[in-house]
Length: 149
Image (cartoon, rainbow, N blue to C red):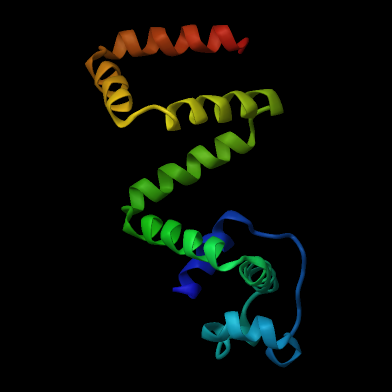
């Protein structure tokens, strides 16, 4: 379970730092979290070691509630298809390229959606699904114009 979580964090937070530590040089705390990598550790590329150490440090800094939440997120991630995971990665990369103002707007819209009742969310999905491709394009264009894009 922890190994899978470390992979997810690795994919999302590849670090440019270089960690050339050998397995024996790692702290006991890191060795516990990274134990499943012990046999291959010394042959891993430095960037992968760095990302795994970063993830292990984050894991060690979490309290039990945060760890439980991370495990639930990991379970959800693992249940997604390869296409769904790739779509999320693409959206995440697009989000990273947004201006701070645009990111704030996206977060506000997400929070608004999140606080809707399930019935309201379903109604919004149904309304979106009932639009023709042309109507969707026009609506998206209008939204972009309102945001000043």
